[in-house]
Picture (cartoon, rainbow, N blue to C red):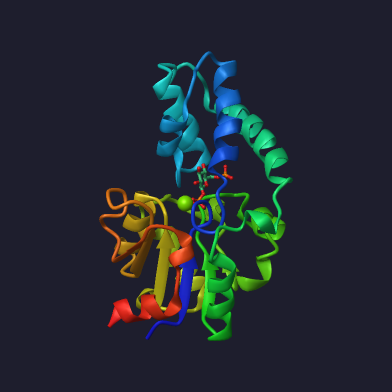
Length: 218
Ligand code: B16
Ligand code: MG
């Protein structure tokens, strides 16, 4: 039976994509690269370094920098991003999420966070949601990012649960692939095309309901 729920952060609990976009756009422009919102879609759920590599490749400058230079560029982007997320408040929680988390805790489910973001703990604090989560995976300790199942498997292990006892919730196709490979039931939030591999799809977070998810399992 289901004992735990494992959440992605960006796009499921809150929407930090605009802040990431703002910070990456400014960093990229320092190097003569212009990115738009459409390009930014590709960066959802992708780690900081992988995001930088994609931007440099897009700008045709992939091979020009050393690892140390790229570390410095990623740190610069993160500096701006951290300043932007300082302004976040519980009003930035996506619709329906607080009710859903409250419902899960009322029924004693264990909750885990499986976000690629190293800023996950700070963001949960800003949203006043830290108390709902029993565990947070530290993405800096992982060998492989999404779509590898490692992050969801690690969250289950940290909760003391088997993967089959967990449900994963994601908004990125790479994240759904990660949940499916971990052999968990996958709940996808998003459009039909990007969520086509999800076991159960919702168009937005306001449709999150424990009853509906449990009905889908049987
Ligand atoms: P950071 P998620 C992901 O969050 C974001 O979607 C992605 O755009 C970002 O690059 C990544 O976290 C790393 O974030 O630079 O803060 O470590 O969707 O996995 O919750
Ligand atoms: Mg996400």
